[in-house]
Amino acid sequence: MSPLNRGYLYGDAIYEVWRSYHGVIFAWQEHGARLVASAKALGMAIGWSPTELLTEVKRTVAAFRDHENFRGEVYIRLQISRGDGAVGLATALADEPGFIILVQPVPLMSPEKLEQGLNLHIAKQLRRNAPDTLNPAWKTGNYLNNLLCLREARESGADDAVILNQATAITEASTSNIGFIVGGKFITPPLSAGILAGITRRFIIDRVAASAGLSVEERTVRPADLATIEEALLLSTTKDVQPVARIDEHTFAVGPDTATRRLKAAFAAFAHQHSDAHPELSV
Image (tube, rainbow, N blue to C red; front, side, top):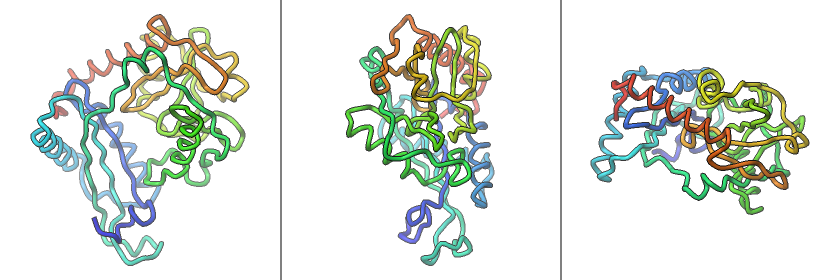
């Protein structure tokens, strides 16, 4: 990669992450649509068709498997930069887009963390980017806001951060959407709070929550509301559903008899069905 690459110099890049379930790429089209939306928001051209990108992804995964002798589930990151060019912010200085594909094993949650749940900390030093600034709905190469909030959380001894918006409402964690369980209902902040339009979040809202016996509500959640929350959870492509045991002084139910565990099992079943239905995405 050139030192004049604009993704390196300015974060002038977009990306998507997929993972496999049962050796099949999950939600290829949904992530691809979000990649196109991010590119459009940045005025960036994607010079390859979905078919061409899928061919390159499959080729890279095959090379990774051969090189590492690895047959487990894979994490796939496709990052597209606006290109190289002379130093300067003007996008007209870029030559042409380029991409990098990174493949590695899917990071797994330890059995201990699954049983004990995660410990989160509400970030105090920074707030989430507002949607009318650098919109968190765009999946770009700019992650300093998330990085610094996570750093604060780790320095406090927590696993991850909960980031508030300018109105002091809960948005999401550093790389995950967040959800809550109250009275048989799955609750999650709305997109208008300033969050990434998570693919896992959308599947849970549209398809999975009902199969776990949960109704759905998108609404504003504030730190003061945490005292009434029964369960908390993180949602992401690589994590699917992860239980949260604590947010600062507030504790939540975790364990095999929780709604969070039912939701995780229901999502696993949904992912298995997806794998069976899409053999063309095998890697």
